[in-house]
Amino acid sequence: MGKLVDKEATKNKLLMTEVFKFFSYIFLLTLCFNGIIGWATYDKKTVTPNGKTEFSHEFRGMEKINGEWKIISAPVHAFIPK
Image (tube, rainbow, N blue to C red; front, side):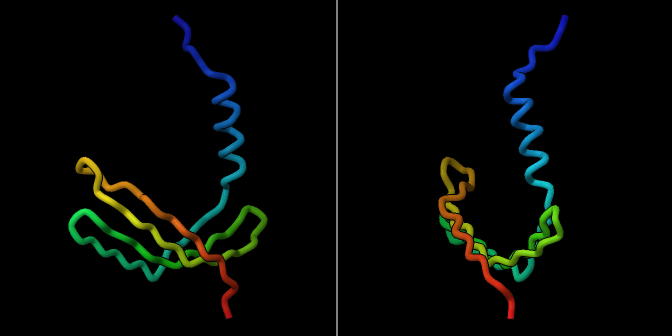
C-alpha cells in the first residue's frame, strides 16, 4: 500500500527549511510566572545564512489556558549594539 503525500505541503515544508537556515543564541533570559500569567524576556543574537548578525530584545507574554501555557504576546525589538 502506498503513502498519501500532500505534494503542496511537502513543497512548502522544503521551502521553509531552505528559508530558515539560521542560528540563534538566547542570552540574559528572565522568566516570571504568577498564577495563570507568565512572561519571558531575553536578548537574541541571530546569524543568517549569508553570515549577517542581527540582535533583538524579545518578550513572550503567556497565559495558562486549560492547564497549558499559551503565548499571547510576542513583540520583537531589533537593535544595533553599541
